[in-house]
Image 1 (cartoon, rainbow, N blue to C red):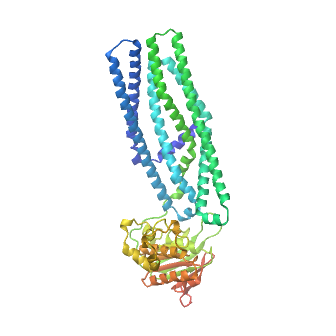
Image 2: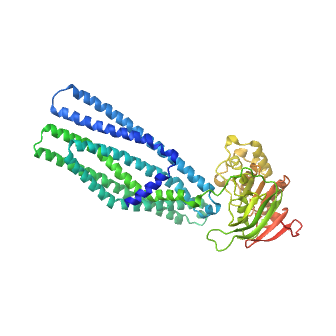
Image 3: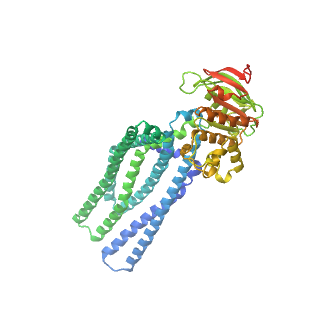
Length: 568
């Protein structure tokens, strides 16, 4: 068990970037200083107690008293500095880890994104990442600090009273062994259960918030609320048990030490030791006890925390080291779109699928062309589109721009305006959604106005109380479906793309709204924009230059405007 925990902590340490590792050096220096001050503090306390016990007025008593005040003040300041340095280092590591994780999630292969549960990624990003650094590394820092102080004080006690101190060490070692063998496995199990119930509870809460309307209409709120509360109750019960169990080491150590201290008093009195020696020894052990007991309690708490959070820390290690999160996109600075998009002998199959989504597809889409792609649901339309967008990499064949540039490049994405049936609107203003991801101070009003005009949003914007600065609610909850779709189209047009891609963008709209939006798309054709529209309704593509029909993962027909057969 200890070996397993050691391997985990070693793995956690390996995740720390080389540039961040040097940040621990100031912490080590301060801890060393704290250890030195602990020795000085203990020596001053023992000396002061001995002088007072001798009963002889002496100016040195005043000196040692002032020295104690000075040293303890310095030690307090050093402890505050130690806490600041450790927490600053840990928080910087948390920020670095979260940056690495979020970049992996954004840049991972799209097919993997669709297979993952979003609650799992959010739990790792917002919960496990904090636990990894805040509990894992912070606990290591506390353990190291307390180990230094423990070693220093024990060394001092061995100098003062070797035999009795050895007995004290044996007692602490026995208690520690008992806790490690009996309690830590229980904390590991509780930690695993806490993690599982937290993740499941998060998933249940997310479903409630995302499906609130349907839950209300179907009258299923008791069912879904019950599922959420069940996980919350289980987690609460485990937390209560672990909180109570964490008190056991502290009370056990305190009782054992007090029993040891009382035994020590009896020993000195029964051996007729002189009062000066008794005072010197008792003051040394009393100071050490007052300093060590809270420290030993913190050590046990940190060991328990590490075991409780072992599942979360292991998930972070596995997530960072997983080969599935390697960046799926590349840079192609010289990319220019001048002639055509080429799909050459492409075959693609999703992980775990029984058959190919596309089978040996070859297609060429010329620059400035309005190409429609139709087919029944599940025939491979969207897969072909995702390959053209560079979101997927084909298992066989290739997708290129002008026959030389890869589709899975950042530069290709910069040339694309994209909208789909299942688009998302952010909780902000109309302008926030049109200038998607552009800070307010960097937005160009002329581009927003042009996107509003090209997407036929002008009348809608005029009727809003604050124009484009009107808030539209979470996912556009305050506006209609047609208005949301036009905003999504305006978002795609704001960046003045060379290629506009519509993925079932009007399939959920009524015919009147669909005709209006497709009218806006027709006007864009006049600007020599390349348009690719995927749909299962042929009437949507009446103005397309040609229509590609897909069935069972293969292109079955290519038609021009007059219905004649056409070749790529």
